[in-house]
Amino acid sequence: MAAVTLKSVKKNYGTTTVVHGVDLHIEAGEFVVILGPSGCGKSTLLRMIAGLEAITDGEISIGDKIVNELEPRERGCAMVFQNYALYPHMTVSENIGYALKVAGLAKADRMARISAVANMLGLADFLDRKPMQLSGGQRQRVAMGRAMIREPDVFLYDEPLSNLDARLRVAMRIEIRKLHQRLGTTSLFVTHDQVEAMTLADRIVVMNKGQIEQVGSPDDVYHRPASTYVAGFVGSPGLNLLSVIIDRASQQIRFKDGQAIALDSTHWPHLPEGPVTLGFRAEQAAIVSEGGLTISPHFSEALGPSRLLHGTVGAEQAVISIGGTQHYADDAPLQAEIPSNAMHFFDPVNGRRILPLP
Ligand SMILES: Nc1ncnc2c1ncn2[C@@H]1O[C@H](COP(=O)(O)OP(=O)(O)OP(=O)(O)O)[C@@H](O)[C@H]1O
Ligand SMILES: [Mg+2]
Image: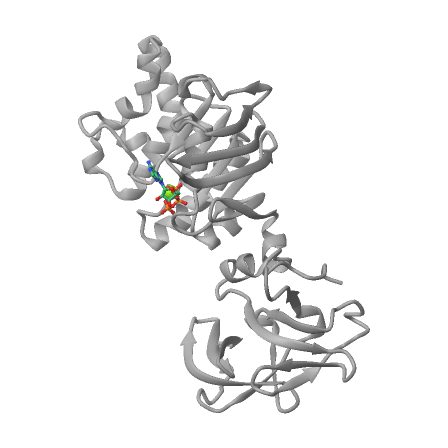
């Protein structure tokens, strides 16, 4: 395993910049997930580390080597793709062992390593099958086996689970995490699925339009989002974000529709006066009989253990989560109390968090 360091790494396609000077250090043995929406530059970043894509500017190191000029096979990375990319005419065994065969390893040694990898991935019974005779999850495991057998310093995963159905995705997620616990190989995993990111990562890198918005533990990005972008992207639902005005004289938080709730100045002594964006999690607001923020629900979503009430405050959307068995008339306005320590405040113009959490 090896550390990976990116210094001001940039990528242009013609005159368009798709990765803007990314700085990132991944410790040896760390599992880092790059999370962001389609088109934000995740695959481009991964492919530049693998050496499949040239960088426009900056420096990439793997271990103690600058790899800018190295060929993909000299970088010690193995990549797993979304579309498996297995050789259809080869058996599972041949697919897994292909890299060793190309490297000229003797058959007996090859078979021993194939067998060890197949056992680790639960593929021992499928070694003579062709990819066509496998399920999606089994194919994905073969693709991982093909990467593992090279005993790389770094695993690079590009949305490897997005072709799988929901149940298999959960099962494979657990297998990948267990594999990492066992092998400890430095891993970079790209996804647009925030649940996948939260469950797999030691640290999450949230990307937005070719730039890093926040790097932090799953706990950090969920509980201490650095910007409204991260806040809205992480969590299901994302953080509620409402435009408010802070009035310190009357100690009130005023909403656009004329409502006001109390501002706990002792909790927020340094909050600036004027317009800000207020954020709070759907599950942290409590329904009270009076005195909260009035939300007008228009839709209820049953999730089993909980229920989401989607509503509005003036022209803005707000979602509240209540217990699955808790009864509530879906169309009656509700009063939501937002605890002071569950409030987040962001700059209304640039979206950055205004104050650290108290
Ligand atoms: N060969 C290319 N030529 C020009 N533009 C490209 C090329 N490859 C990618 N891009 C552009 O670069 C941007 C980033 O693409 P990239 O594939 O890295 O996104 P992504 O985050 O992996 O998205 P997805 O989640 O859809 O896979 C996109 O706007 C894309 O259109
Ligand atoms: Mg991609």
